[in-house]
Amino acid sequence: MSSGVEAEVALDAAVVLSLGMNRALGAAAGVAGRGADALSALTEARAETRAAALEEARRYHQALHEVIDRNARIIVLADARERHGAGMALPEPLNPTGQPIGDLITWCASADAALDVAERQISEHIATSVAAQVFDLPTEVLQTALPAERPDGQATARETLARVVARLLPDATTAEISSVSEAATQLATARTAGETEGLLTEVRIRVQAANQRTAERRAQAARLAAEEEAAAQAADERRYVLDSVTAAFGELGYEVDQGFETLTAQDGTVTLTRDGWPQHAVRMRIEDGATLRAALVRTQAPRSEEERRVDVEREREWCATFEAARARLADAGIHSDVRWRLDPGEQQLPVAPEARQTRTRAKPHERELRQERGQ
Image (tube, rainbow, N blue to C red; front, side, top):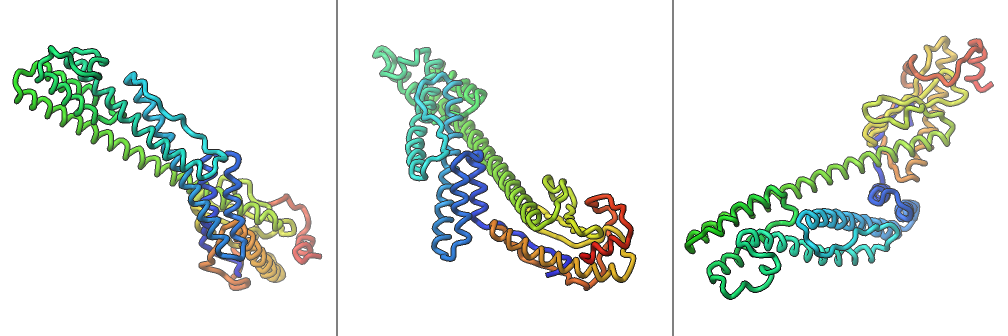
């Protein structure tokens, strides 16, 4: 070990999955237990036990996100249904808390079928509404056969128009639907088959353009959701590392600077102190939850060779503590790979006068030195 150290920190897959599951359900009851099951498998000697637990966690994590995706789609279609005055049924969003994975998968399959039908019905409702405006017919008539006295040419145009507009995605904007309706309205004045076909082509073009923009919005929303998910996962992982480090060193007798709870890569370093160390502290920095740097420092300049000797003793104590903390962190699913180290006594400890002091000391120098010696 060393008095100065740099280590790469990596979270076990079980921790990553459990954090994702807890976030997906808003830390709801029952989810943390699944994450804990996967995490406890880290200590199992049998590899197959660990592999099975992780695979179950992965499947459950995937099922949770599938439910979240369906719930989001239900909300979008419900909004489209309200905007267009459609009356078709939609499944209720599912709260997956406490649901077995098999039930989640079954619900997703059922929801997919229902949502596909609802999406088609909303698009058909929009189409019949547009056709009703063009041919001045009530919607309920357009949903059945046309009256016999209507010319066949108009009937064909109406049916073609309905099929074209029915391709419009249900979450197209009001402006996009208005653009399609504007082109469709011209069909009412068409006098020849060629003119009718030209106007229908224009409607097709506008439907395709509206669908393309709608698809782009969907893709953009998916990208933003993925970015937010990645950022939230990274924040959760950083918090888990910080909380675990705080607990590990606290259990080993160190007092952690209060600023540690909000530490980020931009916040600088944190100070660890302990009773019996009036002239020493540990400066620690964790960057992005992935790199840990720590070093023992002096809180004031040494005043004798005896204090220099004590420095080496404190370095050895810190080295032993760091190894003990690494073991505790490994039990919590946080693995550390030491990339760089400085052995005790290899160089003089740096002085950090700005380091936080644990208490105001009014004792004479001799009493401080006796405390450093453990007397």
